[in-house]
Image 1 (cartoon, helix red, strand yellow):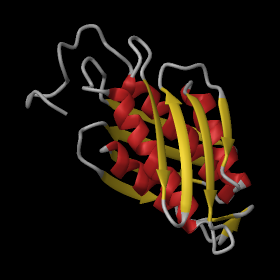
Image 2 (tube, helix red, strand yellow):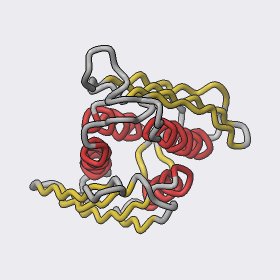
Image 3 (cartoon, one colour):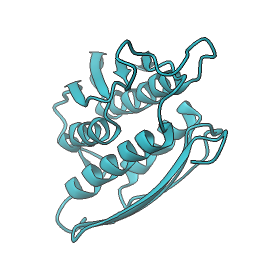
Image 4 (cartoon, one colour):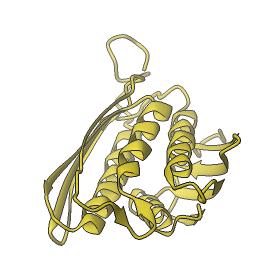
Length: 198
């Protein structure tokens, strides 16, 4: 992690996927994303832009099987990059939330960078795919992010029928909530916890 600029670069390689990722938390919203899954690229570009994170990502996976491994492993690496970029978490607000509308969709995201992973997910849709992405893998993506980042993450659909709008609102709400949670507050000494660690 560079002094003053919180960032992380990670690589992960398995027999199913090869992923390299650089995340800058203190960025400007630049994204250079190529996963081989067009809809996932679109979601991650929105995440970077609306969270004002800089994200560079290359993922190669066994898309001849399906999108599951690529989506899940991308989530793992992104989550770990968030955790690494935060370092000791000194001074961060820790909690973040957003309720974000997109046309018919309204999605709530609330998160806690607690050091404990948990996902509560309610973004169900009757669509099996959006573009080239199996919709059931969206849950797996956020589960992997929560695990890698050691965060408590809640995503809830408050309204909406259009799956594209629901998922796009979710990724953008996640970005806004995370941006709020990673902000430094000068009034916080050490970490925001009575335990003394996060």
